Length: 196
Image (cartoon, rainbow, N blue to C red; front, side, top):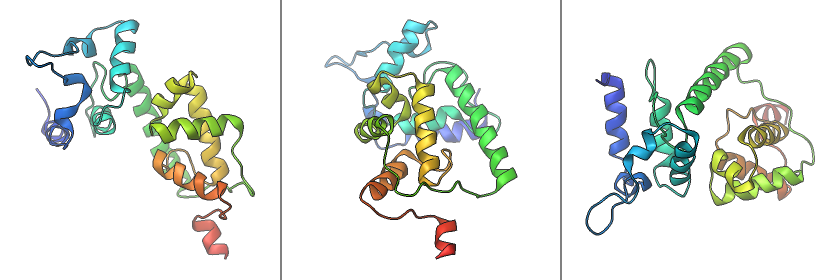
């Protein structure tokens, strides 16, 4: 049985305008599922990999599904592949979110100093290109054929060089900030604006 908070979050996900178009529920002309829905709950690395491929193949509700599965206060989806993430990956992400909240409580909004005359390294340029095609770090890792932790590290380094913590920029915001810096705009941010 779902908690009231989880039930409300699930209702919100199901109200997403693209919910009927989600890739995990595509049907053929007879109304039969093209992909067995059990795939998303069948244990095993191969099944999880196949389920994640479905999610990361351009599912229109990927971000909303992932946000739902990561849960709220006191609940989260503890089984299956949701939003391109396994239960173990969601568990790790929830731990990372907890660390981010703790960091913010300790440091407040103090940001790293942006690198003057920043230009992306070859690894950062590859990541920016992959993120431009599909704004999701896990999908970018698959596209780049690189381990997710390595891609996450490149992302974090790039965020810091741009003057942000990696947990405060969304992928679209990173792409926008990187494009500004590549085009020659000076770094922006509260500390720099205050100094001007």
